[in-house]
View: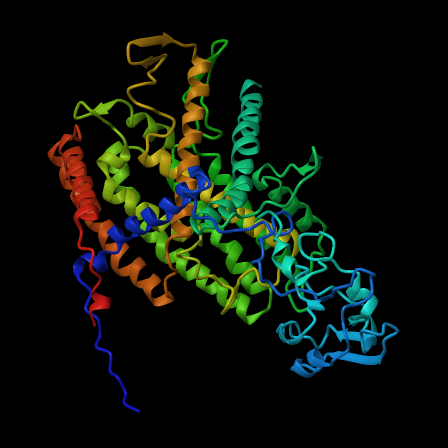
Amino acid sequence: MAIRVRKKVEYSMYERSYLPEVVRGLGVSLRHFFGNLFGNRKTRLLQTLRYPDEKRLYPERFRGQHRLLPREDGSSRCVACYMCATACPAYCIHIVADESPDDEIEKYPAAFEIDMLRCIYCGFCVEACPEDAIRMDTGLHTPAFLNRQDAVLGRVDLLGLLGRAGTAPAYGAQNYREDKPRGS
Amino acid sequence: MIIVLSTIIKFVIFVLLFALPLATLLTWMERRQSAYSQDRIGPTRAHLFTLFGKPIVLGGLLHPVADALKMFFKESFAPDSSDHALHRVAPLIGFVTALIVLALIPFGPDITIAGHVIPLQIIRLDSGLLFVFAFGSLGVYGAALAGWASNNRFALMGGIRASAQAISYEIALGLTVVGVLMSFGSTELSEIVHAQEGLILGFLPRWGIVLQPFAAILFFVAAMAETKRAPFDLPEGESEIIGYFLEYSSMGFGLFMLGEFIEIVVLSGLFATLFLGGWQLPWIIGESSVSLGIFAFDLPSWAIGVLGMFIFGVKVFLLCALQIQLRWSLPRFRYDQLMHLGWKILLPCALVNIFVTGVLVWADPSLGILAWFGVALMVFFIMVVIAGPRKVSALEH
């Protein structure tokens, strides 16, 4: 590895006197100070978001807490095909399949559990689902848990969640885009 | 009797109602001003009550109150191996010496009430400025003793740094003021203010900054170093030696902190007195009248006194704000750079200033040449700032 020798910098008399640059530096910080003190919302340079009071709008495709989508009769759309569990890189989805009472549908999930402590929110389960039965459009963060057992969300928990706009669960894939983010 | 009474009233007005609240306010100002300078918003959370569902935070003004309450209720801890008596006394020394200097600063003109002439200055001492420097030098005992009594190596290093810095800069500080003393011919502070009355060269106020701009800059730099604040905050350093107050908690630490802010107020008051004409505002406020363009009012003595106090307060406040802004604009010195600046730059410059001032005062005792020279210096400095080269040598390599 070559060693680069840095030459000793020769400062000019002007720079060594230091004072003019002090005044100029003061000018820079004063410009920011008065700009932020008297500026309006547009000219201010402040970037601070007062978090608990103001919240930043998440993008439309923000991947948050999962939910299971219901059919019109309220049962889960899931057909227990194991596509999501197979796609999941974190192995956090556990499905127990059982025979469906409905003749047209082969299987239903007797248990559908997501271990929120293992989930990495990659969204592969949503991509993999052939039935549009699982989505990550609730706009919620991971909830807080008091113990590890609580972190495993079951089918009933996931079915109870709503989409981001707070509207009723969507029934068909065609109105997927109607779930608009808050405030937009 | 009237002297005792008026002294108590002056003490209440100047120290209890002006200097101490201003020092407390400065803790808030520093946080808020630095925040805005760095595009942050600063403290906005402390509040006492909510109105219409919104907490009333008053722009964070209640934070100093919250800080003070917190400091009072914390445990005042002293290490077993410390020298307990000195450990207790040290914060008080720094705090009290800074407060004593306030007594000598004139904060308004003499007023006449019911036939009694009352100077708006708590103590009028002929030794004035010398007394100020004497107690300014004593102030460093607070930091040095705190470092020593804590029985902690890091605190001791902070204390040693503080004393070395104070000794170095006191020499420069004392010598820069000699030029002012030569120009105004007195060490008594209210006489220095009176010597700055009226105009010089027909259009400029006869202020110290016009007659002694070079000394003003040197004084400001040296005095900032005396307050031990950035860019001269070598006695403290969170990442390396922490500081002389390392073993202090609760209000012991609070006193160091508040003492530092009072030093800012004292320095601003001294600077305003020596270089900015104290409580005077030429062109507008005269001996017993106020003139604004074509309007002129005759005012009673007490009203002029109140106006003078107000103007002095504004000057002090602006100087405090300037110091805070400087602190948040400049990077800190290295310790050898600090010593270099003190001994090799400020000290010779102060000596040159004494010599030049001496020659100019001798050549023209009415100070006309001195004023022209000062104006020329100021214009030169402003030109250098405006027209100076923008490129930086260090970036060319």
